[in-house]
View (tube, one colour):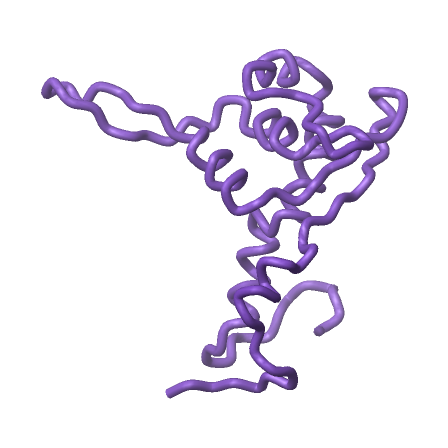
Length: 147
């Protein structure tokens, strides 16, 4: 069964590829004395970031296996997303360890902005689940107004 409530015509390949869909947001970072620019990642950049969260380790049988490695998670995402005014990356992945030594509060502020801009993290996962058709769930116990 296909359910669709599209109000517009379907996009062509040319229209999709021509769409200017990458955005930026400026984030105040008082710990660093100013603001930084966070950009949305391309699909390839996000794949590269996600791949950086895994390492190959010995499986004890002469082979290797991929395991999750969250070391410098915040600094990695910030490095992958932080750009200058021209849109050029400010940090390389080789500089992640240096960036990780900066204020946790400042890094986290940038990390959260990058997560939100790139549709990552729990809020994005919850939003995606809320957009999916499913059976009604129990009423929320939060103080937030229903949307």
